[in-house]
Length: 400
Ligand SMILES: Cc1cc2nc3c(=O)[nH]c(=O)nc-3n(C[C@H](O)[C@H](O)[C@H](O)COP(=O)(O)OP(=O)(O)OC[C@H]3O[C@@H](n4cnc5c(N)ncnc54)[C@H](O)[C@@H]3O)c2cc1C
View 1 (cartoon, helix red, strand yellow):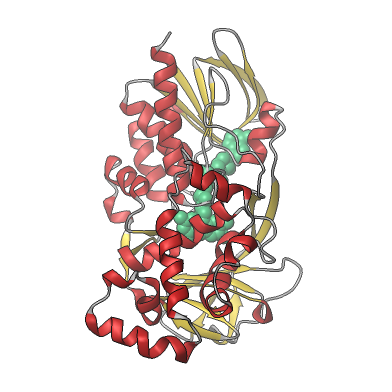
View 2 (cartoon, rainbow, N blue to C red):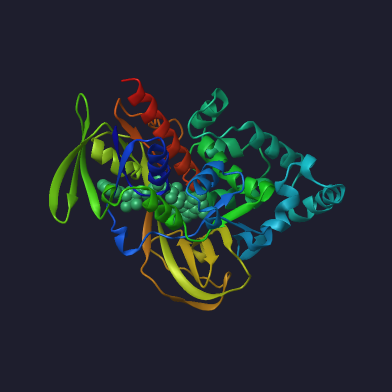
């Protein structure tokens, strides 16, 4: 049985690895030319409980690609001030996980930073109730998906909203006015940050690169088709036709099934489907400069500085910018002016508004969707959907 996997992001890699391990013949199509070693390698951060990424790393034998990051090297910024995660620990952990000393510190410091302790407790209880699962939603989450994040936030006092919730969401959901994302999706993003504090955080300093390289060892060379853009997908009765462009030539090949692990707007085009989404763009700039603190990850949404987040691994720093059309003013984060080094990149993230529908992983009998489109974009969501799409392909093909 043969399966085409389209897109060599972390979702496509997870899908291809799972299908290959199951004995199916996998061909991986990627439009960018990775053959010269130029695989995207922007650092990504995960919580130590992001199992799908960790399972994939161990399945591919690249456990070293994931490294722990101490809490004091990560933080949030707002109004030009940086607060590191270790300083927030006493508020970001549920009360039962705090030592007696930390409980006392919470009591003492809550009023100093403007937090109401009862509200902090309610916040943790609301997060515990939210079962984020990109593959399945229970009724509670279904209700949250109908609600806007503004409505969800309104249950907490202003101090908690301004200090903890809003800065985190501005960085994580790309929804500056909190109008375009469902509560379900935003709470999943909040939970990720809280889990990074509670369970520990890790960085993948080279993003998906080691994963892609390890997968390259597993697949026959002729099945790893980089520099090959898929231009159409057509479902036939017994097969899926994949049309692709390679060296200026358009060719078609037939497969038993296809997994589209392309960005969801591209998947919609390929399938001529009308998904109910809007898209948001963020500019990434690679900078070189000295940071004011020894930071690895800094999240926040400080309009005055036009910065969404800074990722610092090694000597270059990625800065993600809020407003595409204005320059960044980085004095809160950098000592002096950093030098702009590499070309800018623009990334697209889907907005999933309250009540809008989200496509299922199984699109039809032979076509499956994987990627970060389900609820909130992360490596773990993408890897989980990649793995789930592979399981559904297997189930479907076995039934024949
Ligand atoms: C600025 C920024 C920072 C982020 N930071 C984090 C973080 O710290 N931690 C975290 O967990 N997540 C983070 N994320 C989210 C995470 O990076 C994404 O959710 C994840 O990488 C998506 O993976 P994917 O496989 O679904 O898609 P992609 O990585 O986008 O892969 C899709 C692939 O499909 C290829 N493709 C597209 N069209 C075609 C075609 N027609 N034919 C063939 N190939 C095609 C593309 O070239 C691409 O390689 C961040 C995202 C952004 C934008």
